Image (cartoon, rainbow, N blue to C red; front, side, top):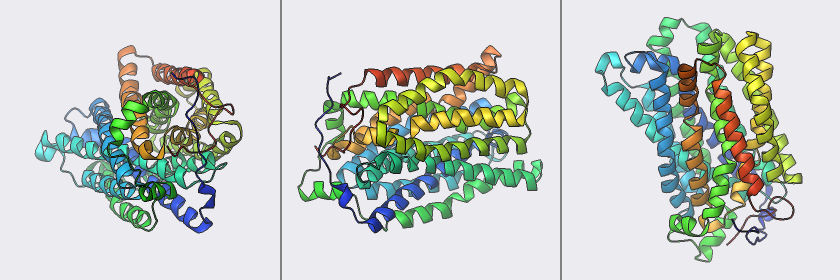
Length: 439
């Protein structure tokens, strides 16, 4: 890698008036909430999907379908990253929230395996691929959008609201499933009730679309268009000129990418199938884990504005290397609801430290003309290979080794990879970039 960070320029985002800034943050964050509620609710109804769409009712094909969607994410990132860099961040975000909501709603109305046979899982897979395309475009567009609006000195704090919105979307799904499972019979949920979370996606998506069409594009992108500086081939330019920084983004994403899908997404299935918790206990633990994660995110984001992005992410990664195994052991062997809540919360707070600075860190790596495309390549490739496959890998490791602690080793390895990447990555003297790059 090169020895020094690229030259930086002060973007002047501190001149954005408060009202447009608030509207922009709301559009990015609330739309992100909708996206990740839609995307994450799949994991919460995994056992119902297994019965509805697969002949043997096994969780493995459900999580295989979950993982396949992540292989669509880089393609979605390439398509929507191109749109974001050529047409605008705002239009990119409007398009992805529509695609995600329609694909999620479609899952809620699909016929089952008993009704149409093997065509049912094929249609489920198609919907998940469409969700993956949307999710791939969301993160690059939203992180570019928020960070290009955010003033210097608050970029870590404000961009930490993106993973907080993701967790809030999952929390909403968790609370909804807790309510449904507490008030309706297992038979009702298996026959029809599991569809409710997917059907809700449509009105949520319309709300997200409304917010995202009521805000202007970012000052930096509008400035780029005025100067006719939009790159005609942002994908090619990203790969040719930003490959080293894309590699850094890839490695930096490992802690959050694998941590999010191991602890915040896969954990409900782990608690139910491995630990043996009841449904209400599962969703109670999940809610505590998510709340701890949400509360910690802005704290870590603000800290990264003061001491730098890299130290916070490296600290988070090292903490997970040390804490993941004992936390999983306590969860698996204690049988205690309180112990599971505490152990899960410790992990989720550590993952939050890896997530909060990440989106500002990536946005600060790349110039405006290729920011969305470059982020989409580095982030989505990492999540595709190591994050989205985490539930499947965790389930496979447990089945093949008969060791209920096997998922912890996977998360520890990912966190170690992130720490090594960032320890070797170039940086400025402050340990993070104070401003976004214009060119």
